Image (cartoon, rainbow, N blue to C red; front, side, top):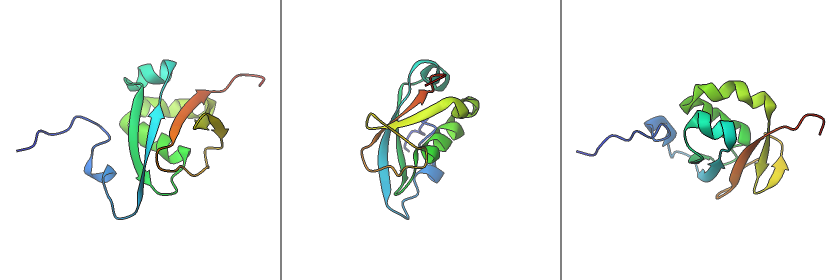
Length: 102
């Protein structure tokens, strides 16, 4: 019998493959890393998913992150993007705290 996974992202609801999926690397730094308890997560998301959708998935696994969203900007492949931008296979997503006055 297979050993159950302790990975919060490895739930059956997150493995539905009825539509094309893209695999995205999410990197977390500083207090986000401390809150999540890890610095990197790979997510399988529906094709056309956005950084906002990826953030939602992170918050499902770690609800303490939810309050942080308002103070973040998104970067995909080292370029700032809106949270509504489409993600593609292999993208690297980083949530970056906004700098006041910038």
